[in-house]
Length: 262
Image (tube, rainbow, N blue to C red; front, side):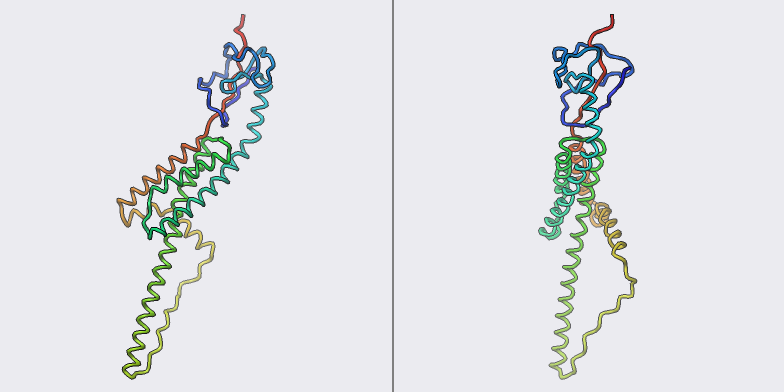
């Protein structure tokens, strides 16, 4: 009974022949001197190709089972490495922007994309595919967009401190003038009470996350030209992560007959 083995991702990409039609056997001369290139046993009846190498049905089935057993673990490792790289990229992006006093170099998005894609391939040992590409692109977008949150918080606190310092200076000058004029120094005005209801930590974090994820589009309102440039460069960074996470493909093809029918 003829069977077919589909493509699975792995670390070799040397086979470039088209995928055979699995509904019928394809007769071809087996390469490698009619021996399995993995167990070195003679090939008889049918054989498979593992990329460009000939393999007996037993070795092909072992590889198929091994791939099925390890592909989930490879994806989990890739996600773990990718998330770590995204967090590192987020921190690096924010720190550089803060050190440059708000001047954000959008080309850093490309570096974040490269970092995420490379880390995922490191974690999976070269295994790639569509779900790896989707994860790499989303992690790149999240890292770059969420970097806006610590940047905003830093400059908001900096502005608040400046306003408090200026207000304190004005209050001191006012009390000094009152003392010089012989009047009783007035008491500092109490800050107006905040009547807004308290917000839970979960709600606050959710709002901050949504605001951060929307930050590439929010920047379009302030400066449409630079906002659009930032979006384009972010797209290129996501594309780099997508291409790297494609990985390489490992194909098990067959079955083939070792000789044409008489």
